[in-house]
Length: 535
Image (cartoon, rainbow, N blue to C red; front, side, top):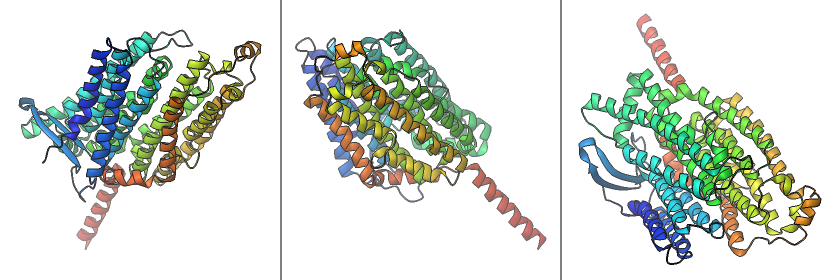
């Protein structure tokens, strides 16, 4: 194995750039912005370099993943802990999304953040570095380290630079709620990881946290002790489900979004919740295929409840950011359907949906910040009639709402279509219900557009709008154009992304063995054996 130094650089660049932002803050408050932007541009450049040099093809029939690039450095060898980083098509696309949205987060905070600019960018870039660490770590101890580490800077982003909620809740309350939820979930996940390590030690006499080693341990446990495997699978599932979030473990998300600064919301909606979907796909499904298949109906029902619950709550919101937060809960139900249907179509649809949702939700939260800077409110009841005040903002808002609800030609539609097409054969009733929910997505999209752009202003609003409001400037338009271009690319030519992730998704789909298929094979074998004995 040849060490690829680009992999540790992907993590180190945001950390070093964030530290430099904090150091130079006292010299000039503009310097941290430029350092952060350059740091994320370098990170994106490194990701593109990996894409150009990698093959991203798995060996056919391989029992473990075939990584395109690896980096290995011994760390705590007594405990079997190493700095082991690797990428395949799945993780490469997630790192690319993180780097791109990191650039947009720096850009959208350019005019919003005016106090402690250096410390703000330190927290923003360290959270992004932690997310990248999650995506490329294949040592479970290192994965868990980054999983927990990225929560601390996000806590500070919400607590120090957030906004007070329309319901009177403070930003500190929202940050603390987020931190408690995710810490408890992390503890439950740690129990599952340590349980696997202990079982591996009992089985082999070795202590190890390496992905391939624990994959073998978990698969053995899944076959020999299904009840124990089911318990460990639930520990990992809960740890990821809280951050996804899955109903009824979603309580932290609406408050965190409503109070977070714009860059924090981009981080939360565009990137952070994707780490949970990645974790379920990378660890839960291949580690515990039989236990996951047993749990599939429950998980999909939770997802369906979340789809309709999120849509229903979105109908009732007056705060634009809270409405968008509930739409994220609704969309994550499709992620669970895709995961537990467990075939190449649904996994590829999940990948496209994660990329498209990351871009569309990030763009809409950026636009919430742009509206707030001009109107000093996110209450849609006070926005009626602003369409006539903004030329570019109105167009982009309608475009990204259309993307979010799955209009054909944009990335979200491709993801949803692949998921529904792939899941119908296995879960027809659940798939039909999920398809019906798309009508509700269209409704809350129309509600957002109508309330924000086409409502009738009252007398107080007419006075407020007596003087023209500033439309989007070149920086703001540029940020939104990047998101729009990405969604159009995903919607019109998704094959370029599907080719990168195809081998990874095929391996994951092959590793997912539904229990019913196993039962059918055993039944057929027993029938054949009886026929042989009778002859």
